[in-house]
Amino acid sequence: MIYHKTLQTIVLITLLSAIVQTGCNKTPPATSPGANSSPTPAQSSAIVTEIVAPQSIAGVIPATGKILVPENHVAVIGPVNQGRIVRLYAGQGTRVRKGQRLADLESADIDQAEADYLKALADYENALRSSAAEVKLAQANYDRNKLLYEQKITAGKNLQAAEHDLEVAKAAGENSVNGTKAALTAARRHLLILGISDATIDSLTKKTDLGAVFSLNSPIDGIVVERNATIGASVGTDANLFKIIDLSQVWIDANVFEKDLQRVRPGQEVRLTVPAFPQATFSGKVIFVDSVVDPDTRTVKVRTEVANPDGRLKPDMFANVQIVTDVNRAAISIPQSAVLNDEGKTVVFVADGNGYKKRQVQAGIQNNDRVEIVDGLNAGDKVVVKGNYLLLEQSRPGQ
Image (cartoon, rainbow, N blue to C red; front, side, top):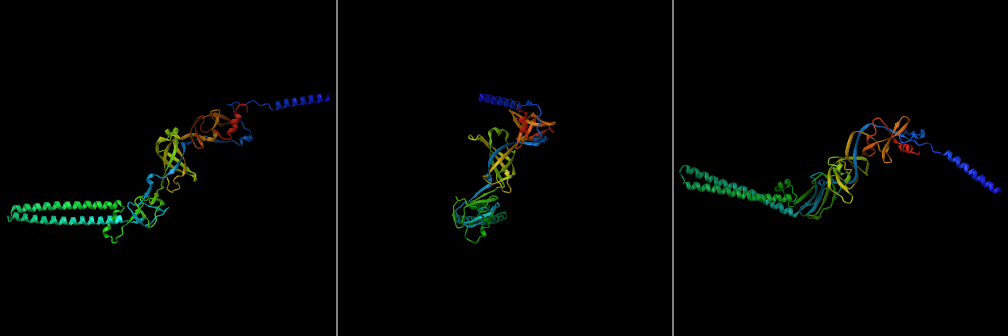
């Protein structure tokens, strides 16, 4: 009997404790969504606000890409005729200027081409002299017979014969000069094709040594990135001895999703960053938008040209690209951290008296850490940029 009374007592005490505990934990009435949220002093210290003011904001399309060397900034140099390398003037890493000598080569082909040119030059000069002499002789004979005819000393047929001889001499001389001139032009053209400069060709008549040496010169300003040449090596016309690139400007081919394509056009400003220089921002512009969509990635190639005078941007570097598409120079914009999603609605918290009021807004252009607000905020409003998640939780029913 004592046991049963004790058990009843324990059960009664337990029930009384539960009733008391339930009364103590009763939830206060919830704050309605439209009401102000008033944080405690401790919570207020964690809240940061910003006064809204008009300022410029630009919309961007982010993309990733790879740095390339423009096609017209790359030169691969090799001989246009077979030869043997006798001197080298540039190696890998050498910075060269347009026209700078890279190597000298000896060539039997050039020996023969030079000899052909000198022979053609001699033939042309001989033809000029011979033609001039023949025409001069025929002209003198004609002048003499004309004088004699006018003095009635000689017959008219002699004057006619002299005139005929003069015309024949002129025609023969012109034909001889034109023929040798064509041969000379062809011989000079052959030397130019073999890589000999006009100045070198013009100086051949003063040349005293027999060996024919021709130079390989750089066609562009740039840096030698490859050299496949050693002194004494014989090389053919298929050899690529030097590769030179000019990095004063580079291209970036970025992949832009097709949904953003309507916002992209040539001439737009582009901002570029690379992992190698995270604190630096490079500027460029869109120069080309591809006409083909990649069927696998659903992206379109957009090419940007960027000035690179110090050469920091290297080929094949990965780059983060921001294509500037829309600019509003008098926008109401706030940090991204101030904008919250409340059950599908875009909201912010604005200081109102001693509390903060939730306000629905309409967002516009977004750029990195800022977002344009096209409706719902006015200049001078004090918007919460830090600690607003706490206010959002307090504004919900049941909190």
